[in-house]
Image (cartoon, rainbow, N blue to C red):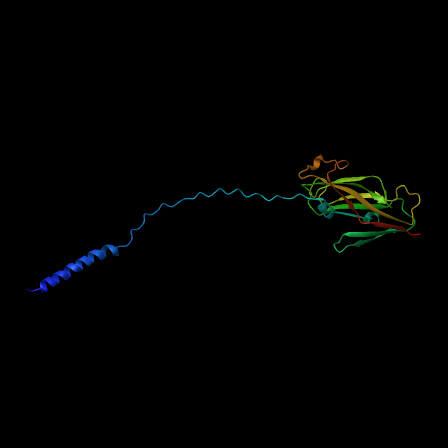
Length: 217
């Protein structure tokens, strides 16, 4: 009996069986169905808040309103001379006045208020008197400081006669200006302010430089 054909037939049958078993295992995994993109709603962002602009305070008044006192050029003469002492920041620190006989009947000391800060949004009421050897003198001075406002944009000047009420001048006297300053609330209209009576909770004092007046014999 010839077994060769049967041998080849068995091998062929075995090969087909192995191929049928291997083919399903070689196929890759089925791709998963694509998922729809999820849309996540973001919460609405709140609008950006505008920065709060702080108002001024009494420190701004003390640093921003410069009060100086001295003899104005129009009052200088052969009998009246003045030596003004300046600070490193060119502010008047002291004024020394020398008066020679014959003594004048009047002696003018000019007080200047110069705003270095804009007070247009918050005006400052300034009210007070010149003092001679610590005694207040008439008349009372009052104004509204508001740089760029209708009451003056570069400064306010007032003249005081320090000889008033004196029959005989002393050997020396010390005079200076002492004012109450009231910082008004924000957006206070300047036209509605009475400088003689208006005031506010934000209060401070403004002093001028001292003026020493020597009457020589």
